[in-house]
Image (cartoon, rainbow, N blue to C red; front, top):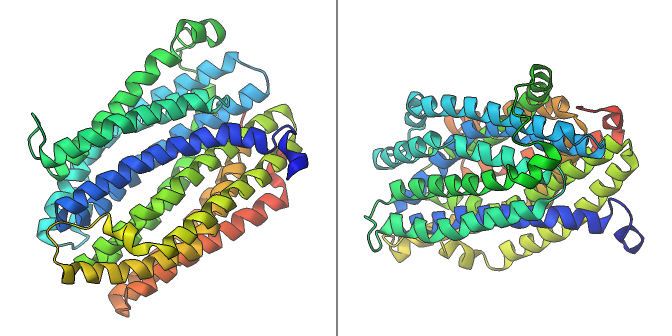
Length: 455
């Protein structure tokens, strides 16, 4: 490890770019986890509704977010190729896409509620799911703009700015979330409605912070961020061609989780609540590792722009070592103190007997998480590296095939036809992560990505 510390694209460079992104993702995770904790303590129906509705909303947001996030790769490769004049033009293509996608998401807020109804969840849970889902989709364009604007910094390796902005959003969101859920001071008690409103308001704040930073006089002088606002058909076509593949992949990945949650929901509110809690806890380890994956995409993109695939290999290897340490640490924590973690989400209206059942299921689910957690990190790092080079079509096809073959069909047959239990579904979920991580690893080792470019 020591010889690679100071080399270009070695551990130091990976940490400098990835740690702020990991912290940024951690702040997002803290927002989500505290949201779940507040809702869990508010009522069992609220926590049972929050994750299915939240995942379904994010499912549709994720497609457009996956497209918008590819601005990061374009900016990274143009930065590596020393073409700053293309950075602002790429940024504006992402902004135009995000604004158009916002209109579509707002219309989906009411058109897609039958999807929630088809989940077959109890009426009291369904009512809350629909409310939460609509609020998140009506504000769904804001995280797209956040993703695009942050790409201006992360693509150039300036990830500390992204970290600071997201931390500000988290600092504001957490007390606002509590106040709107429970009704504190001048705020009325709004339960899950308040949680949705607080989330949208934090998104709005983050975008409001980015705008003066991105379009500052300094950035105008260096990149022409204000002047180069024109629509570039050729660049937009290339951006959407690669971005759509990334968006479809992101959508399918989230769809696999969403379908898993909905099939779990058919096994009862207690099992659904326990699964929701464990998946929320899993986010503590997942999102920081996801931040490292974005950092790998940036470094690989810059290396490809420079014509140095050897640098890309070095950065990917170093990033995986870093993620290994993080994931193994979190896996040990999940196994050592499962009751403490699950108890953070205990609804106030559950008796000791009722919550004991949630704990029993939750302990088992956390063991599944501890099994797949390292492979999750492997998938995030190597898929991030492939995306940074432009190998997104392969990732899209792989995720699409296994989403259907290894998640959707087995989960549906297991619950609806064979009447198997929750452990079967968690086994399927774990297998899905293991298979994808293995395929991405060997795809990267194959080296086809070394001859790819998006610019």
